[in-house]
Image (cartoon, rainbow, N blue to C red):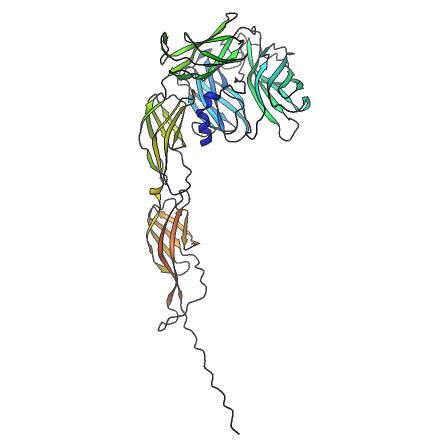
Length: 553
């Protein structure tokens, strides 16, 4: 997971590249407001991702926006994320719980391998429950694969019949081998593919009478090589929308990430519809630098929170977009939060033995914002609790390749914003766990003789050898091992020395005894620790022959 953790710190710089930023459709509302349709929960979840088609070996941000009767749920509401593929960055498991801030909960899904993940967010509040899912397709990294940059147009009527061009690159196949599926309002329908080129896939949108809200985002699933043994799937969660809003009227559904440092220059993606260049973006009353505009997303750099005429320091601000030509505007109240940059000041309990149970570590600093990812000496730690100035984490198990301590910096990353800091030091104590042997009793015996090995650091010992031959053994406690002397390889009884009676136990070879912990790569050896003995035998005298004399005639 180390490669994944490194990729996470670059995530904020990669958002929006070669992919449509995402929004999985939730239940639609008849009036476009906060009232759910008949038979659905008053608690609604919309789910987004910074990249629906990330390369294998990386992470992608997932944000769930939770509302109850049209209003953001209270801060601290728990949201459970789960996935059938990949792991979440915080705990390296396929399930994680994150609490909301300003109605949004953020995590990161990672995978070392290519494959398709169905990520799900679930929450409950005020006696109501809801859920939403999104598809994320981790792409193979060998070579350069297909990618999607934008859809044109990004908006069309629910009656269908709109000619839609999916723009990108490295597409392959023909109309017969390409499948495009639209998913909206919980319904899936296949579109008619009319043309496939290296940079464009052209389809005719299907009819969606279920899309009755003013704007219904659509998840598009593009499958290239559908009739081959190895089809390739790209998901486009926010590339197109059905609805009856004028396409030039902007609307904002989410800002990802939804927080960043007071220093500014956080790369954010504003998700919505009706965007048309030139667009202006404001955080509070301060204008931001716009990097790119498409119908469904705007990528911008946040302005600094402080300075002349700016008063956004540590504040939650509205995000406003404005069409510079028509003057049409849209605002997302409390859409972005300015926070203190992550800083590390000290750490407790920063040296721990690898052959004992790990104990929690407290990291002190500032600017911590859940969810966070923490590494100790390059090893991902499980995050137990988060406050603005303290983190409580449990060290993860390191991969030890030799009997040497593992030492490295402490790294903390706010997953929501990508802001991170590295410093301090953490040491996994390996060399101190090296097993040692004080003595072996008895120090001699035959094959199968019970032997007690006395020493220390025996917990976790995985092998015992007499010379080069493995012995059966059991670890009694950290200072005692019981073993049976293995076959020595000597099968012929020795000859009794002069003056020694036959049957007397006689040494046939002395060997070293070695104990080893394969997990840490550490071993301990006591030389000439055990002598093998066998009953000796007295050699049978060889009879002497008397010469035969030949009679003299």
